[in-house]
Image (cartoon, rainbow, N blue to C red; front, side, top):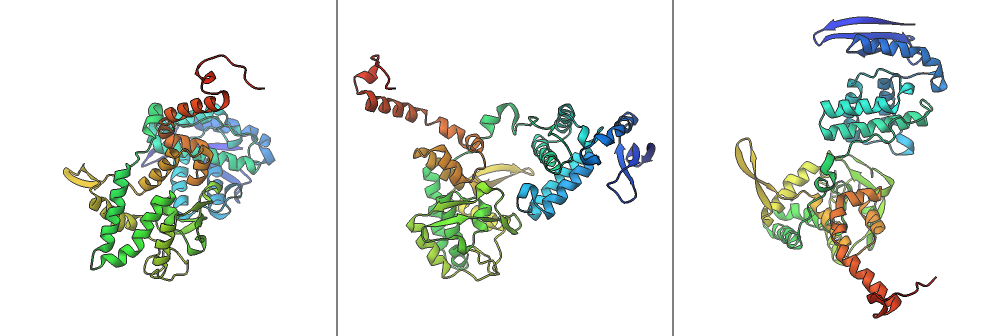
Length: 404
């Protein structure tokens, strides 16, 4: 049995549905709608409660709250529990999901309902927030499916591309040139040689920035790197530090990987270890108190000064004034490393694994313009293969039989 109650407050008029539910101790749950029509549609669907998988029906907001709880306390689909900062972002997206007026119960949702939600997101939120929220909603449905609360995923195939019509062009990263990267490391070396307070700071930041460029690691990965992960000629990426410095596992299985290091870098790290502060987390690049360096401090204390020293800054208008800002973010060294792998002709699977991408599509989306730029190289390789197989004369156009 359900009833509809009209509520009028500072935010206007809403319609609250009270209905029986085994999910709450009182035996009654509530759903709020902006229109009487939506509230009535909801109550009409309550008659199908007995068709819900397991005999218990959930509203979408209830499912979203369950998903948040699983992310925080258990971990989705057998994964690790999400980090504090990640959970904050999930809560932000969850609030958007619950802001939408869902006219149906969770198990009654169809693809058309998810499409309506997607359209509402695009009309009322930024494209980036809409895309991220829809992705998390898909995660909610998958989690509920794994718990037997729905029979299928109505969001399958419903997506939002990250940058719309021109996603391919806009999604590509800008790669620093060889000369610019040389300028970055020359700037790092100069800052490390300066007197006063600089040597102590740069004993840590110099090997840190060199490691970034020679491994393609993410800033979160080298900020969270621990000494036990470092071997005689390679390191194993297994953990990361979030923006605020909390240590946790890498976000996906693909993030767990082995990266080999040049001897020059190994020697630099061995030298740094002699001066490295001790700490409970045994980090490679800790602060003086043994904690991870936060991303904001790394940018302000290390990266921004390097960009300025290297002359890699550009003017930007802020609050009516022209200020100089870094031309690249710390991720530029990761992208540069990937570009050199592509330039050297490494196969895409190797690049995907080395960069820690969960899917090959990610590699294509980020570095596709560099891969396409090697078409001439691939064309030349095809000609060389034909000459090896058929001989110089037959490879020039003469019809030949292809070996079985």
